[in-house]
Image 1 (cartoon, helix red, strand yellow):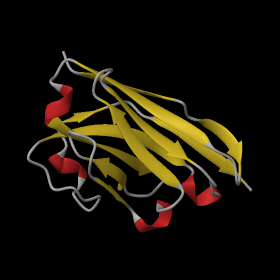
Image 2 (cartoon, rainbow, N blue to C red; image 1 turned 60 degrees about the vertical axis):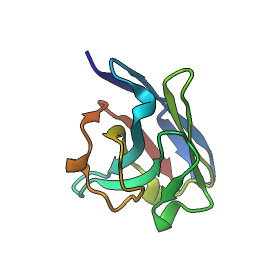
Image 3 (tube, rainbow, N blue to C red; image 1 turned 30 degrees about the horizontal axis):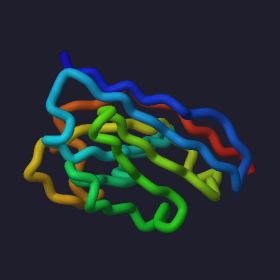
Image 4 (cartoon, one colour; image 1 turned 30 degrees about the vertical axis):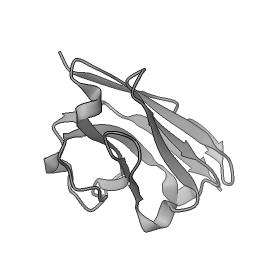
Length: 127
């Protein structure tokens, strides 16, 4: 049974940092691109960062470049998102998702392309 479980969300002040994690199980983890999406209240879900199956390729949405870093540990079937210099506009529910390779390494690839999803973890950034 496939399971993705996010953790690490919380409430921080602007300028702070958080590290999100996603633990994956029930499928061949390193056959899949992995991504982080986010969805603020009342808005559409957007891709934040994506990483290739081997971890050598990444892509970020423009608003987080230089502040967020996506990484994966294929030995532990885990995905991470290091978020620095957080802004109030980063507040959202954050989801991890899996897309079987071959996959287009772009955050513009929409959520329908992703087969597996976690339940999400809330990030709130106060000014």
